[in-house]
Length: 188
Image (tube, rainbow, N blue to C red; front, side, top):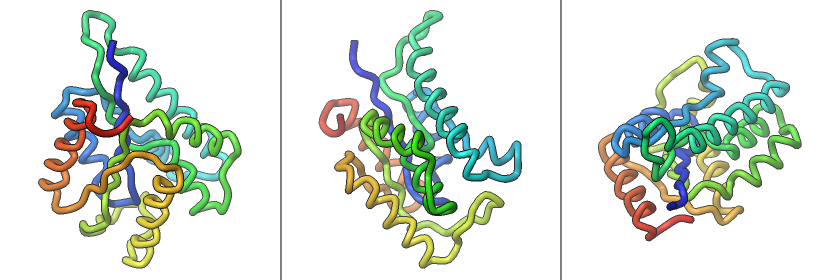
C-alpha cells in the first residue's frame, strides 16, 4: 500500500488557503481537513491562549481520522489528504498573538511537521480580504507574516513550494506541484 501524502496549505492570513484547499480536495477527490480554529472562532467569537491546546489537538485528531477512516465502507484509500492548516500555524499564531505557546502544542507541532509530504506556502501577493477573524491588514504586517511562515519551514528544512499569482494561477501551480508529489518527484 502506498503511503498517504499529506499536503498542508500554509501561509499568513488572507492568502486564499481555505479556497485553494477546497479546490484541491475537489480536483483530486481527496479528503479535506478544514481549519478547526475557524470553526472554533465562529462558535465562540474569540480564541484565547488557553484555547490553543484544545484547538491544536482537535485539528490533529481530525487529520489522523481523515487518514484512518478512508478505505472503509467500499471506498478506496486516498493517495493524499489536503489540510487547510497545520500544526506549525497554531504555534506561529500563538506566539504572534500571545507571545508564547503551550508546550504540548509546540512539541506536537515539531513532531507533526514531518508528517507532511509538502507545504504549499501561499504568497501575500493577493489583496487582503477583511474578515472578523483577521488581524493584520497592513502591508508591513503581511510581509512580517510571510517572513514568519516561510522562516518556520526553512528553519526545519521542510519541503515547500511557494504558490503565488492570481487565483487561477495559484490553483494551476498547486495542482501541478501535487501531481509531482504523487509521482514521487518531490516531497516525502
